[in-house]
Length: 292
Image (cartoon, rainbow, N blue to C red; front, side):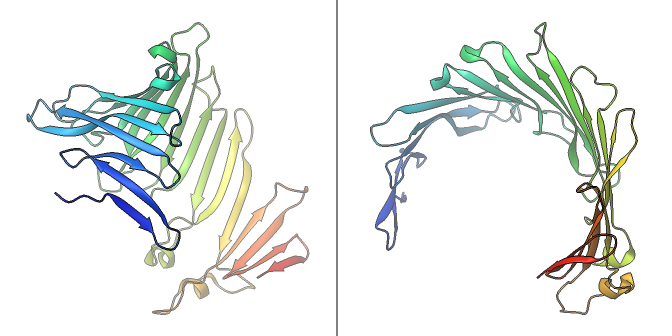
């Protein structure tokens, strides 16, 4: 069995060194400056099929030759088809641990993360716990592409001073974020802020598969009124019709004009017009600057 034992960078006269075990698994990589990464392997058995695979169980890091060696230990549950949990323990940090939980359901989210948590030293109390709720964007009928719709976060779960928060988001069938809700700690029923996003539509743009041009973004605080963060228009420049820039000759580069308004600065509204590589910054009465 042939293995790569070194790789030299021509002209710099530096090299990377590699070592393997008898099965051809990479066990050590030494960098040109003397840093060392090492891996120990174990057997991972899937009870459903009886299949066995080699898997990394320990990882070591040495920043320089003769320096301190750091170790991380990987662990997982016994699995019939795929693993439901995986953990990484930082041995050098007094066994602080991170744990991931994955869906084992035979639906649209098999193998996707459903929870994450961080444990205190010596595998002590949980410091952070996150739950992930998945849904689909409806892009393929009743199935669609899965995405995380809700992330619920708990700080110090189970303690008398536990603090909870969450975020909720909605995507359209093109993967664009259309709404994001942020909830303050201690209030998981009313969002503290709700962001809404709208995107450019039209047959000319759809023909060019342009579905991700942001048209507007607003934010609405709890109990307040919506505030416009940005409002964009496209392909209307110096009075030209939108179709002028939307129709593209075969083989010609795509050059679109975009205009957006920013009312957040200097107590006035500014219009920014971009055509190709040229940008003009204007207030309500005159052109201020043009950048090429």
